[in-house]
Length: 379
Image (cartoon, rainbow, N blue to C red; front, side):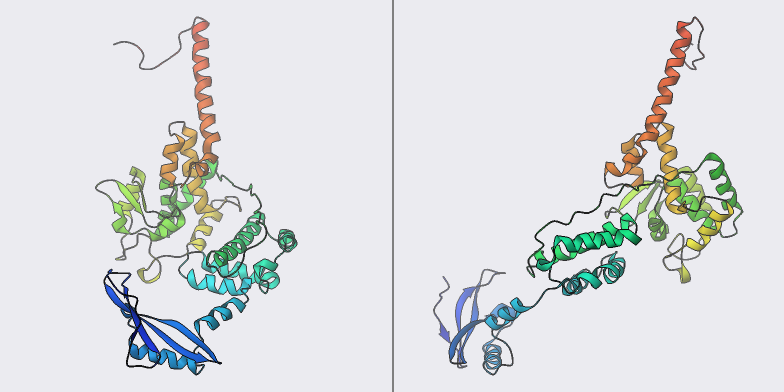
């Protein structure tokens, strides 16, 4: 059984006790230092043997404490307590720890433009409800509701980060995010879709043309098409593997016949990417080419071509009445059913048409006529 008896070393003011390793459970030495500073005797833990602390290192630590080169643990704690963790300081720390976050660049822009000027110098505990109201009202005068929501959500994340890390107390109230009702289910009429497909067929840029066709044939997001590699296309089993999609977890969707034929005839450039960018690397933008095709087809200016084609894909399936919303959710790789619910009215309309058809057929029977119903006659 390890003893807690103090044992001297060859260095003045350095001793150790026999403790137990947190990693292995075996006995190990835990070093302590004793020294006098400003007339006060101080005793501190220097560290464990498993942390590479030796009597010599402990003695060096003791000397640094005694001569003021390094603060004592108590001084360090008091210094940390005196730090003012303003929103700006919290943001800097948040940015360091979230450096690999996908949306960090956008968050940086929002913070610099909208949060830093009015709230950057404030500590969260000193932010009043009125400050948030002023921020919300000021943004609402020149920015869209979605932007206001994103900015307030960013402030909420920054402050929650600080409280979760124990850096500062939080707000005395909860930030209420505005409710947004601007979900738009973009669609095209039959004439518009025909015009778009005609322009796509005639466009000389095969990469842009096939990129748009894949969005329409599969409902894939723009980012998913940018990441799509030939190794992700399983021609044998008939699936497309989606790398790091919006929902986070890798997914796979069926490779339908239209998409298969397109990919089988699509030119291979030697790049691992199906739609490569410069020098065969991952593409990051296709707005110019897609915008040209959209303009040539005469589509509405507010129609977001690639996002819109994904909606067209979903709308066609929902309005057919042959695809249930759960299946549609899986095809669109929506994380929750609520995201797919926007297409429910299209399916309801298809069911209503089917019900009306049944009523018409039964009405014909009641009126003494024989409706034309295929495949019902016994053979």
